[in-house]
Length: 232
Length: 94
Image (cartoon, rainbow over all chains, first blue to last red; front, top):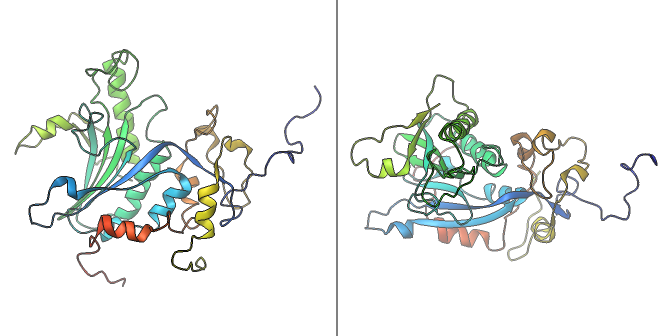
């Protein structure tokens, strides 16, 4: 061998200056695997608002740096009015169960009673796990987005998945979320692993239960509470 | 210490850098300055170019570093979208 090939002079290459080297003069940024869109639900004014006027796209970003520019310059969850939501979803997916990419899916969610929970930190950590892609394995394909709801007497954080652990119409033959090539056992395990990761990010005690429900179960549940399909 | 104030209508140096920066292709090429950690290597072994997973510890390091508005007209846009969604109750810090 002709000696070490690494560590040699790379002076011919452009120098890579990150924001940590020079916060005002960097030339490389940290890409995210997906583009993410932040949405905001405005609290209803009580004057018969149209839902579509209340759900607003705030910004789409695809780098770590830009995420922080957004996060550092937007109202923290703890300061939002009641009935507000933030939603952080993969670009192209509306944060509604009717969206074609959500309609066969479900969500893990947990409600924090009262106002004692460090909601800004929890929501930040959930967003970081989403954009850093550490909530699921690289081929799971389940995570659609995360959401925080500000309600009277509680905060709720949710994680939306593409499937409910079953193959779906148009889901294809492969080992993908909703695909026929993914066995029910594996599909369930994928969802449960995501739920456990979510629970860990939310810093919940083992004794607490995080529940998974299908969107259509919730939508058709009427006044009765939808049955949780899975818990971790 | 806060970043230097930016005149209205003037783009911050930080945002200018963000808009012209290129996407990192190989994170293993980067030597982060001392005091900063790289992403957990186990997350990115064999990662395709530009497709990296980032752990929370790595991501939190940016929190005090990228502080400027993420776009021109950010505040105007935000006000249009969020309107008076500001605090419904007065919050006093202490």
